[in-house]
Length: 271
Image (tube, helix red, strand yellow):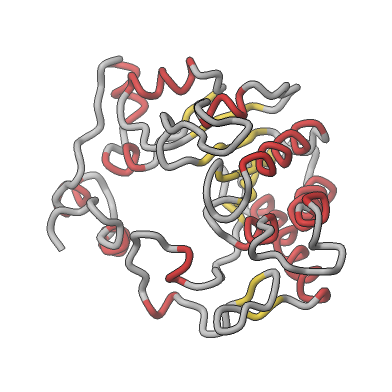
């Protein structure tokens, strides 16, 4: 079991929560980011960057003490670590900004810190977005390459909105996004992917594309017995969206979780 490590602050709810209704009470009144963006976010000082790095490492230690098998460092979907990777949002002139190596320093210092602080068999995963959020695909691929080469992570989580999507950035134009990463020499690192995988056949396609494992989010929410159903029926399909809130209740979701899923466009039929 793995918790995800991420920082809840985003630059702005409007800029990053695409097609999602955001509860105002969850928005940060003083948003922060890698750099000052007038009217949007305050840039972290060097001391704050170092303290935040320490917070991630401490969070991993807490997870270890709580009995988790590992943690997943969330560097996807516009969260703080991905903002540091972005040349558009990271305008720093110190050692955490500039070239890709410097923009990735925050991420790799977190990973190295967790590896040094936790036991040797404590698993570390890295989640990265393969598209959007201001980071060139070539940069993301280089980050993945380095993470694998340095052998400090145990698995790589490729997050994409649709596993079938093709790349539009050169020099990868026309290739599937998955292939941009599954062709990397992976040493001992396992590579998995998510991205609107709703059927057993689609899960098989992700594996056939070169992944070692598949992650299914929406499908697992809709069906808590998803793995067993897929094992029993290789033609299994998760329930089609949207679904009634009563379906989610019968699946064991709490009222709070159902209320949250109502913020996801096209998920809950009755609002």
